[in-house]
Image (cartoon, rainbow, N blue to C red; front, side):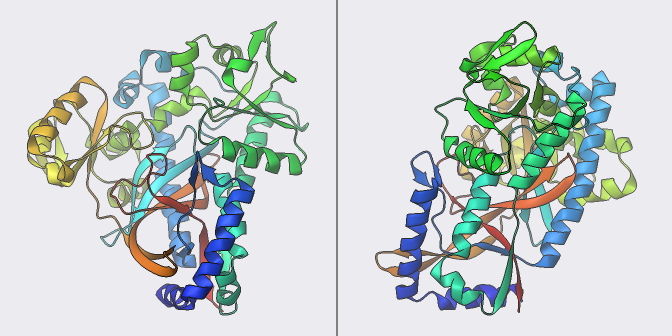
Length: 449
């Protein structure tokens, strides 16, 4: 049924209608600031369609995997031997035990996944538990696509429903603040990140949304804050609730472990979302902790099944013996011999930085990367077959269809509720808008009328 909907949508896109649609899309992208730096956020003319069954499966399987992540986090805070598996830096270990004042280590987060043809149907490859981006972009792109000329015709025959994300960010922020403060007043929200990051345009979209919902909101550079007399203060006065978009490691690199925001956090003087304890699950090693046979006792049977079906084989790169598909292997020689089926990822980076796809490099380059991975925290992960879909673009006055690899990145609220979905498209195996390629497109649930 979903294939029928995609074929109908594509059939509607004559060159004339596609040209009209592209012109309106370009105009809306400019008017609404839908740019990542100076690049247009969306370069295709079709949204991502999911069936109701696909989305429900994404929610239920995601909830199981997230339940396992929470158990791993609890075990890490209770047992130094488990915590060491996440390969935290020294300053991170100092901060993960600081009380946050609220229940969830990551009130707002995002899983990165792919729908695949193999058994299980879904693979979670990363967990962005620190600063998930794209929610406001997704919601505004959704509004834009609803108004496009091609959608006017498509909606006569197909019902499409949006999967918004901004409201859950707001709810999670307010929920954390109420737990932290013990009050139910309406807090001012401070969005904090460097003034020169390419995601500034999304901060403006969040600020507009929060303001329309009745919350005062200010976008603040970390250099603009001071901590004195037990109060964290910014350009407009006291700061109590921070929607933290600045990455913790960049905050420490530029401002040190005693940056005013971190001092205020340690003293319980600010509600910081997401707080430093989120770093435990944000580390890519968190997937290795879930998948490693040494930790199977941490999870119940339902969670172990979900892990086996939905998380690719993942290990921290180190000298050890482990199991791969039921067979005991020596990890480093195994990784050296099977580069065509493996990926190397730094334990804590973003935008595709440092990722090495074994099948795209030479043996010599792979061996050098393995040596690097031994010196610095890295994971090695099983390659998965990336799903592809045909998407239309408008090039030189006509419609052009091209296969794009499709990433499925569901948003998470309160550490366990999957709600909303980011979809990213690319023609290269590394799907990441931050890395300089690809496109974002809004995600809809689609059903025939």
